[in-house]
Length: 209
Image (cartoon, rainbow, N blue to C red):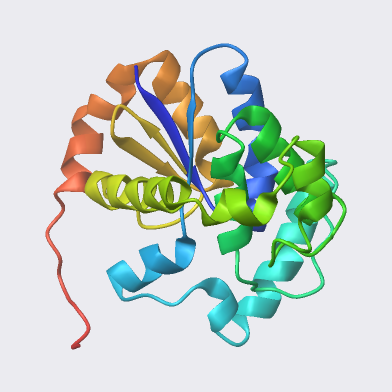
């Protein structure tokens, strides 16, 4: 089974799912694919939770509560939302490995440090052995890989982050991880009659654009 994890460092829910993805990657290959969440939102004509007053504050409180329930560290960076391009490109420059992904997530969400510029991420780059992070993240191959990741996510139908793809079957969000693992253990779960029925359920009413 081909397993891909689409994520953006801007998402605290991706940080909460990350330990589970690391554990999964220790048992079988998982392709880590950093993508720009803002691009996904634009593709689908949506706003992010942090762009909607009220929902923003609730989301932050909710994710803090979920972290406490999971006994996981979580400290918000100085500003949020922030521009994650530098972090995404640094991850790709580091090979999109578990080590690179882990270091960047830990810096932003474990320590609550800024991840919105190469200057802010300089200690992480040093930790990863990237001597010239400015040049590394400006490499056309790195930028192209980020675009390719995004294109692949849209081709698969990704509509949010984090999303775990199991042979193209998409599981959105940290709270869907147990569902994903159940389907990984027993793929026939996805193909049950009721699962198919609800996937093609007729729309009874729709908002006018």
